[in-house]
Figure: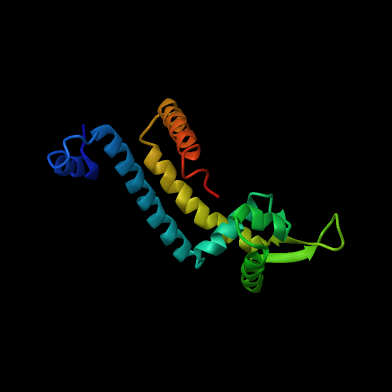
Length: 168
């Protein structure tokens, strides 16, 4: 079996901490390393399309609502105060990535819409990140990917029900 960076990490730590469970340490360390790797890919993808992380996150949440949402919905999705979302939307609107329009259902409200340019720039960054996710997990067959997802679900249910609670 091929070795990865974590194998060397375990070899260094097991003599120092013999009580260390190599399977737990290996899984946690590998999860962290994978997260760091994907974070680097995301940062580069965003730099390539000249987006800041907060801009991508806002466009992503908006895209996830079929490209149209109320600012209050975006604030809730992003876990932010409405005033924080207003500042984000101002910046994105100046760049032509979103457009505020009167609500179709309530004349007192405005909705935020992705522009064609906003959708294209979001999609370009997403395609880069998604491509890397598929490349990395593509070493597993479909059954293995499902098994990994199911195992990680069980781990996350335990994490979310623990003392630190659910993430926002």
